[in-house]
Amino acid sequence: MSFETEGEKVNNSSGGISALELARYVIWYADENHVRITQLKLQKLLYFIQIEYIKQRGTLLFDDPFEAWTYGPVVRDVYYEYCSNGSLPLHSISEDDGDISYLSEEDIHLINDVLNKKIRHVASRLVQESHLQQPWLKHVDEVRNGNKPVITKQELMSMH
Image 1: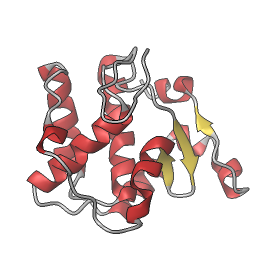
Image 2: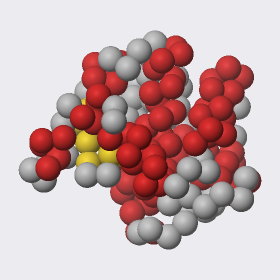
Image 3: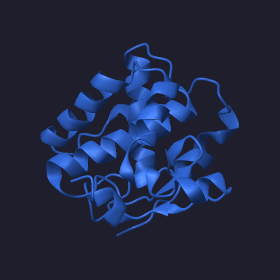
Image 4: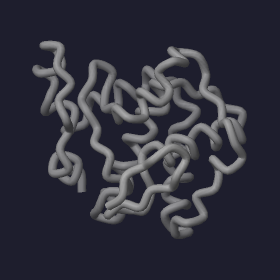
């Protein structure tokens, strides 16, 4: 496993993409499809892509951990990358953000399928949906006490 340094692609032991690379792709995809996407919606889309990948492939698409936060699962590194935007819409910075051709066609299709199904949903609907899933529910008491516990790989894999 290698770690990301500024602007570099990351190889990991899962699907070959980092959560931040996938986030950039999701933002690019939203721009291409004229859909408004905020940090909150982005986080939920990353979660649902990861869950669908687990269901179909039996492994993680990316290794970056999710944490259980008040409004659902969050990848901390992605949050810090875009938190300065607040609740304003996110926009792609580079046309290269849309290049995930290093993934298999099947993986790209899976990602796009989840986006096609969920990207036009309002963020609050995605939050509610994430709150019904076991990986977040397992930590609800900790979240209510102000904690942001890590959702383990095993908890995510239980969605398989």
